[in-house]
Length: 231
Image 1 (cartoon, rainbow, N blue to C red):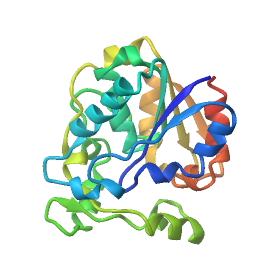
Image 2: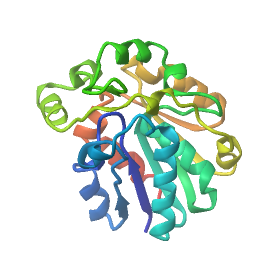
Image 3: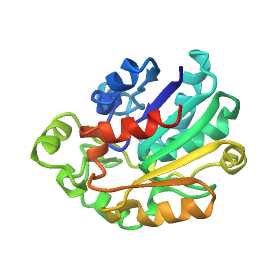
Image 4: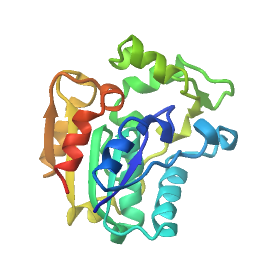
């Protein structure tokens, strides 16, 4: 049986996988859903110094402390930045990498450089502290009323550095020998260009129809099917 490590995106926490996790576990798999520093129940640890590097290191340390080998890393949205960094740090503990409508950076890229409009959107959504960003309206990302209410009720601000900090070196070499899948929501233009870049890099690309960026979380059977197809 596989070990899935699911990494959430901006303003989320391990809770975003509450609807997917039991589906994978019922199929007999182990599922880890860490909450990144500074978010959700770990919000009190937020600081101006919490960025991509911090998040990649802590997930890498989780794999080591749990003795995980051959992990299937899954990153949604910003989580794609994190899992790319994890693969560079502990390549021997990673078997597959899955980007779920997510950033798929190369060395030197940040979330802001990959989606330049995001920096302006973040500037227009200040958080409680000057270095934080408040959650964007989930409805802007394709959530219906029920989904938007579920997400908005638990989203927390996050440090801006997470999206400013560029990816460090080593990920290209780490991913070169691994099975990498890029899943994107083809009816929503959010990550279309990144999906095209992923295809050029030789990743297996899966285009999903009739589901949105946040629908992958709120209606998890589609993502469940794609993940179970990998094992």
